Length: 430
Ligand code: CAP
Ligand code: MG
Image 1: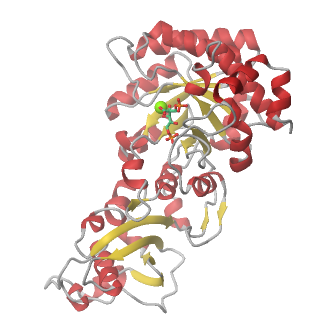
Image 2: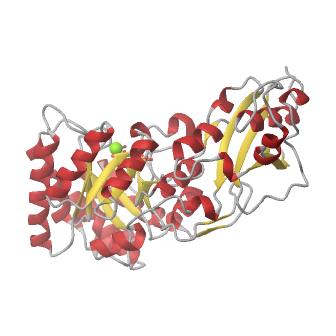
Image 3: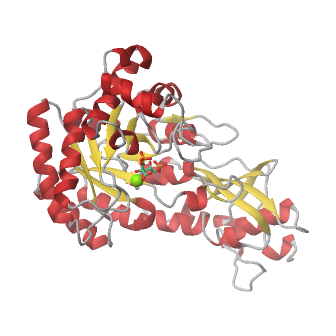
């Protein structure tokens, strides 16, 4: 294994005080066998910035002096590295991640490496738009200010034709839900073409608004090749749709940046995070959902799936942190998070989804608060009396919890909620 000096320069400096313009990355790092922590830090600092595995004749002292990152804090397996902002291109998440979440995960010098968090300085924040609506803008659009927003995902995930899809959405809205989304793997299928689905679903959305007197939103999944996504967001707009949904990881951050610029203040962006668990789940290796969430907010998603803090069906270890880093302006440093002041980058609406049903709404709100969007797929369409009853059970549960009432007492006045609790009880699914 190359020795420390072979990377050319000292990247470890405990007396370094980060410059206010530095981008800081916090890593969990386990060196490989036979590699010291110091050596491993030197290698990842070098490989994520200016160097490589050995000294090079082309390196100039000036480059190292101006662009060398400094590992300034180590606590256990956690290391904080400050990177000069000139190492990064303004407005480019792909370049940021190619540096700080790129080659270093594959280096032999590390056994495990996880990007835990990122701190962005004012200068870097200024090169991104952030959300155009944010939490306030979404609440204003829906005219709902004092409770969690409630939504569903049309199920089966894929398989219904466009008319049946639209009718399931209609039943969900008239039952009491605010939002209806496409599932993450529903795009444009032979049996459910995008254009037909959008037209039929938005037509019934308008009818549901007329009948309920409430605003109702349809989150159409535009995920596709980038140029096609832009066309699909225009089709949604032409039919009067206020939302687009995108699977940000399978579409990619570059595509997300293009979509954000394209829809700008015209449409709310709902960000699904399918595939995240491929690299966020292992607490020792990969990239935390906190880091994913931070770059998504920076680019400018208005709503983001953040997990259910263990209340739903998905594995979760840092969901509450994820909610905080997307919804709050100030993030205080702790053992996991770096400090962050988001300045004028608007907050992103945290979306709790996955395995939720009316019987656990109280637990969800207790852990995640009211400033969330709660989505129920199976927990709506799996109701014994169908979608409309499922939607009403969800709405009755959320209204009860918002008013400080127990679900048990609410169920006495809501047969739909009583039946939901009869079927699913009041415990989280496995
Ligand atoms: C939920 C869901 C969402 C998950 C994604 C699904 O359906 O539509 O994609 O919430 O997980 O397909 O599982 P159910 P996360 O309500 O029927 O579970 O929000 O953690 O990214
Ligand atoms: Mg889904």
